[in-house]
Length: 271
Ligand code: 13P
Ligand code: ZN
Image (cartoon, helix red, strand yellow):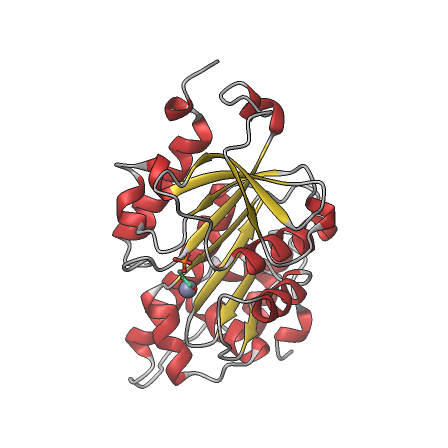
């Protein structure tokens, strides 16, 4: 058996949480990540027949039965993952009943997975239904995206359009746009279901006045999406109270999307 502390997926979680913390996206215990792992690879590091304890999830995730995820712990600080991954992360498998998580490693202080597990696992199911290669769901509280939530209409077309206008690369990086949910109570199945519904259409979902979700085939894709939205939101916040002298016009965004061959939300442009 190989040493779990050297596993590439543990290293990736350490690296990504440290970066997200230093970018200011994850104050205190803000944010959470779930990453679906290949059972064969996990089996090189852990005895998959050894379940440490079982934890009810409170919802049904039948399509995920037998799937294994590494997930950040509830109440845990991204800042601390690097120095103590076994306490701040856990590896869970969805049991045969579809409603129980089997803990295979981690949460070593008796803790459990993020309170946002419904939004994560329901989003995994939604993304897998449209992209079987999806593996990562991440949630965070990026500063400028959040600031923009307070001064910009919380509406999908308008929000996406403004972000697309702020950086030339935006329409190429997230041509599918950004889904937007109003402020909702977090940490429950209702917000999980609403997020998953959006995830069928978008890889990015804003939780109004709370934060952002990103999904992708790997850590780079999910992180890159969040990073690009946050950069655009930063430029918006730095310029929104000054006279706008120049902008990227809708025809130019269309030109970009067509030159890069991406499937974009034509209905989000005003052509
Ligand atoms: P957890 O500590 O339960 O992951 O919650 C953090 C958070 O961002 C809630 O939305
Ligand atoms: Zn949050």
